[in-house]
Length: 386
Image (tube, rainbow, N blue to C red; front, top):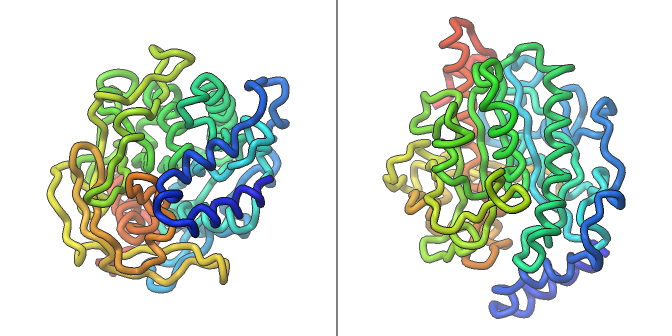
């Protein structure tokens, strides 16, 4: 079924701009399970004591170990004194069920997803769990109740994985939390329910990169009140978020129809409509809304389906500016950064890719800052990094 859906996507793109505009809706429709959500019919839960239940582990050879040519520094997981817990985005577009089997993954999907996680291997050991992600249709307006239940089941796996990591591998080390897309839906809840209420975990948190899904600023007056948005590169224990759109893009989903976890809402979710959302510029890492020119962009990379490796770093890809909670970007010149746009000229697939080296250097700077605050020294030595 997934192969049919992927072929259909290629056909939709080939048909032209009219079909292209509606490809998300078409894919969501084609990936909608025929029955209602039923937890008793969900796939078996992953056992996080089994290394197979992790997309990436520090002592496991995986795509999160890869570093594109031109990236600085190399893979430093063997010497890193900090960790990252990364929650992957939606890759399941099948109608077989509301939640994916945790091990339903192609090699290409693994590589593309872990190219995001690999941005953190310069500062940290990478832990990325598999989980029973909700299917793409869970985000469609026509299936709100089914989608909420599927997302709730998926979150249960993510929380169990995080608690397993804490109990067996963390050993008091500082950590980064990171995610994209559906992974950010779950990370927002993990922050609210597990990290924010716990002083010890807050002290260990270097930063949370909750990317590719809207985060309402009012959450920092509620369950995230013990945390704060990152306002500058020196901030620690804070949260970053951005969602990338063309300058003339239309982020209707992010401003009108998206829902975020909230115990005050129906089935634990509340609409985003009318609520200001967080945007941190991933070049300046500031909240000030100042435009960063194309020349300031340190560079990005994408996963090559042909080679199975990340492409070399390309610098100067886009200008970027946070406006009304949305990261507005100029059009990247390399076509490879424009091949998969969502409706509204949404660069969702490239939220990490366009700023890969920027994010990498930011994670290293914040990790160094955490250890400096703790009067320790972080490895590796990054003094040569611009």
